[in-house]
Length: 73
Image 1 (cartoon, rainbow, N blue to C red):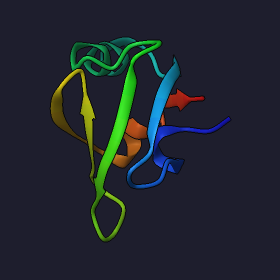
Image 2: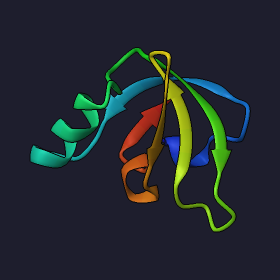
Image 3: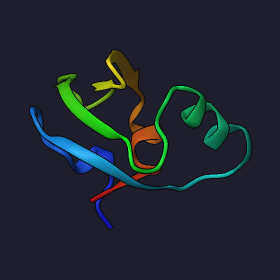
């Protein structure tokens, strides 16, 4: 299983599945990250946290813990 955390800078990936449950999963979905959406990795902080991505035309910063819940293809 490959997650968003494993994707490299400059890659555009497609969300396959969201893991997690309850409020955490709902928050990720509210940010626009849903099954089938394309996510472009823009930047990764020096220690790997946070990750800056472009999703649905806007920039978003995700914590490493959140990016591990997003399975990609």
